[in-house]
Length: 318
Figure 1 (cartoon, rainbow, N blue to C red):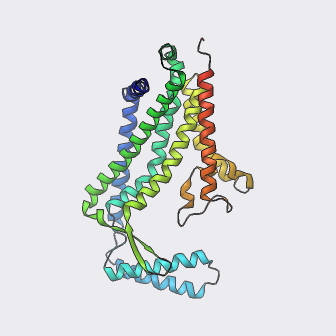
Figure 2: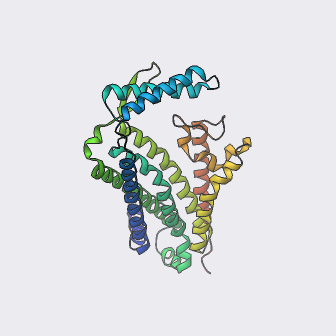
Figure 3: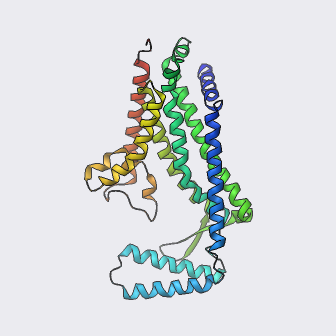
């Protein structure tokens, strides 16, 4: 175990001693700052002092539509009824739903997890292929550690970097929201309407953690796929290019093929588990959360086995 720990430390040094890594970190922080600044500017620009009147008009419009529009389906009727209940609650409590709190910044920053994924994929795709590009793989293999331990240490270091970027995104957006809107908004609850039509409160942090938690699944899958691709190439640039290509094009191709029932077995059809959150719908109507989880586990194990097979059996004499 001590040798594995030393290997992980060694891989971490390779990651964090490179200027490229700190450029990535700086770019992520800059993106969070710009996004937060734009949100604050847009909110103050479009601030409506007559928000009570606006909510009242919205409720009147939705009530009229519920009564007159026969083309609304059950989901649309439910959403509109719930929104009316929420608007009534806002009016009774004197709460402006359009005012930003720090949680709005954290929630909006969850969209940047795709950027965290791209940055980590670049690192993952480079972890093994770069050793062959630089010719340093022989120095690793002459040591006492087995190829399996070397591969595991690289994977753990890569996932550690992914976790670091994810926490950095979460923490920096929280700080930006607190600075711009005040930290008193930490106690702001998440409002929802129960099946009985009662407005209920729940901790906002649970909603944020749920969204980030589902996003972590896609992050793990993309990074593991990139790690597998890295083990198949001797050129780090080729490994990075193919990893980003599969990641960026895969979802688009899957959407184009969504009319075919067999598309549900593809990785990219299941990788976004937020499609099972309330208010969303899966790519295919027959897909379920348990089906996607099982599919992802199969792909994950396949990626790990292929990466291990390619790395442990590869000839490094050349």
